[in-house]
Amino acid sequence: MSADDRVLEWLASVSSDPLAFVLDAFPWGEGVLRNSPGPEGWQVQILERVRDGLPLDQAIQLATASGHGVGKSALSSWLMLWAISTMTDTRGVVTANTETQLRTKTWAELGRWYNLFIAKHLFKLSPTALYSADRDRERTWRIDMVPWSERNTEAFAGLHNQGRRILVLFDEASAIPDIIWEVAEGALTDRDTQIIWCVFGNPTRNTGRFKACFDPGSPWKTTRVDNRTVSFTNKDQIARWIAAYGAESDFVKIRILGEFPSQGEMEFFVASEIDAAMAREPEESFGALALGVDVARFGSNFSVIFPRRGRDARTIARRRYQGLSTVDLALKIQDASRDLRADGILIDGGGIGGGVVDQVRHLQLHCFDIQFGGRPNPSAEWNTLGEVYANKRAEMYGSLRSWIRAGALPNDPELRRQLLSITYTFNNKDAIILTSKEVMMREGKDSPDDVDALALTFAMPLEPKPARHGGYQVPVQQDHGEYHPYAALTQNDYNPLDLVA
Image 1: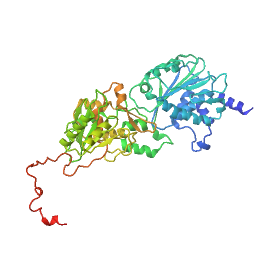
Image 2 (image 1 turned 180 degrees about the vertical axis):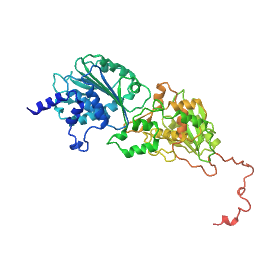
Image 3 (image 1 turned 30 degrees about the vertical axis):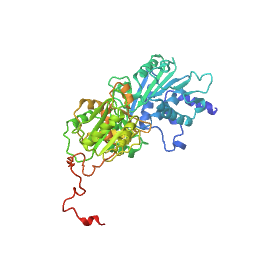
Image 4 (image 1 turned 90 degrees about the vertical axis):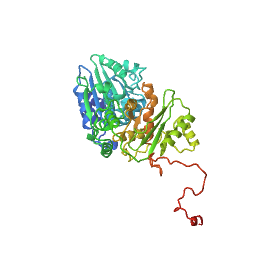
């Protein structure tokens, strides 16, 4: 028997056993897998569930919610290679929350395992498909990588394969729109067909079809994976995250425990903490007085000057303006700085905010040009060390979130609504990134102008200016009578010898 015949015989023997396939398909313990003895326990459980559901009289539907970095993409790759190589004319489709995730994570991981697969010569892998090396079957025996589009769902609607095998895989499924789920369900109507639908993701949202998989009465078999139980996760980093965010935080629930958040749909702030800050009496503070200035970018938006002194953002009212030119807004900032004796002015310098910065400096008033897209610099002052942010805006918001737990906010329903409208996600470096103002407004939300202005007061630490002490100094009344060069000196202060040096 030739080597190819032995491979084909082996593939036929594991057609209904993906776990046996995975154990023998790759060189475990050798080469690049020398430190990998085999699948993790949770991966074995999923493979066994597929095995135990075959042969089947209904679709296998498996949903897995996990912490970060547990090997979801590896398991997806094994399922793709098993499905296509152990049944003729298998058809499948793979998608993810974004095209970037699909190409750089899901499909890239498939390429890694394809190169290790002992039967890879039977199939070809392109940037968009895994398909049979037999030219006569490359159109009917294939798994396609399909970026989803709510306006173009044909790739999912046409997924039928009567009497054969269908594989549907969703990666980072929590962020895939409901319409894609609904169209993919059309594949479940084929009779006498092996239908395997597996969805994986971090449980980032409390709404949507991925969350519904875990509801009581759901037809989905579910698994939750705590990444502390996985052998290759970075336990030191996990410990730092828990210390930084807190064991009960949504960050830990989502990225470590594989649990759905308590706050809602990836809300950045906690409603109970906001309410407590709005009810809390401000503590007396002699710290620096910061003015955060958010500059309106659209006609319906507001430019906001938000004062904050230490843990008190309530006592001094914020100032809101609409329709001001950059020159007029700079004059309003000058007035606020003079009235309040501010220790620092922090302006959003992006877009037209750069013009406001220029105008303020033209008025010979010192200010800081803060770029929301700039490099983050987490601070020990607000307990954000150890947290990972994608940019300066996210870092400032992280400081604000930490501050709210002991600070005093204005009791203002509009401010509360803006705070709760802020949502976030993670980029491909696992750093927190906030939903942009532009996206929020397209979703019908108000622009968070007030919150951005308050967050700007956390852009950098400030020290009270000498003799001002954070706005508490009472202005000295000046006598504008006849000028005398020694009028400011008392008799005891004056010494003619001081003039000879």
